[in-house]
Length: 312
Image (cartoon, rainbow, N blue to C red; front, side, top):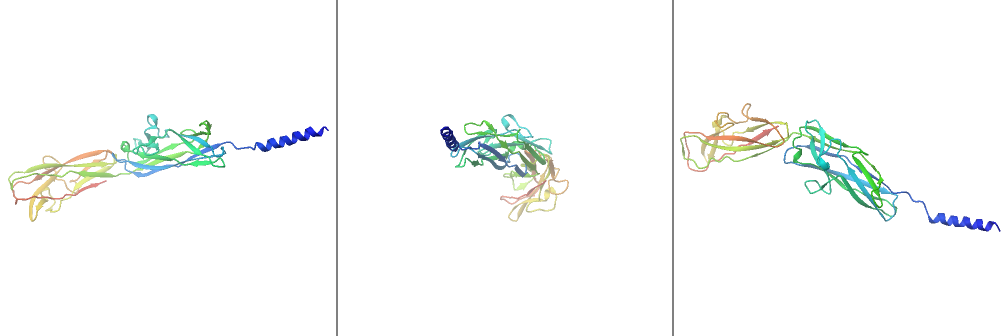
């Protein structure tokens, strides 16, 4: 008679144990790939972009529920401005290389600076889920003061990278990987030119006729360059007066010079090119042209094409 209550209690205990199976707690982690811009110019007005996934994986959650994840990215080893914008890479140059880390899009495309960004992760029937939002990186024109060389910024887990998560709020600390942002600034240049228009002149050229044009060069900061001018389509010798504009078989001699006094000829050879060092921004050079005096031209329009050659 004393065994009945004991047996009944044991059976009830078995039922209670079967009705409450053990379930693992929710765990989330983030893996961020390193971002490499590769070779970039660093010139003013240019931008370079790269991107990579931030993979956030959760397991052990309530099947069919959602998890919350809050991914924080700090300043990195290169530091940053207020509000993590811009961030900086440091390296071979004396000036840092400025860049942006953003969510949703690049900074020039309307993206928002990545500080702490929250995500919702749907969990499947096993309580697991994974998302991979994109981390965008962009070097904009404000990075033009960087000189040639390699630049990096390191983001260490637990300091510059942090993941918090939970099913109701981001209240639990997860694990997150370290990553690096890197770029290699290399020399490059762009050039634009204006036309030189002498306007309407007398067919009998008794006195010199002068005009100017401009050459605008943009080269990577601190990179050396030269600007040369070829002798056009109708050259005659290699002196300033060796250039000629043509109207059919008729020609009109002119020269191109570095100076307003028209004494320093501008050509392609040693001592005749313009030399400079890039600033990352636009640099303007004046070209002084002169139609030489004591010429008799036929009526008509005279033209020539001169090629501008930038070497760096």
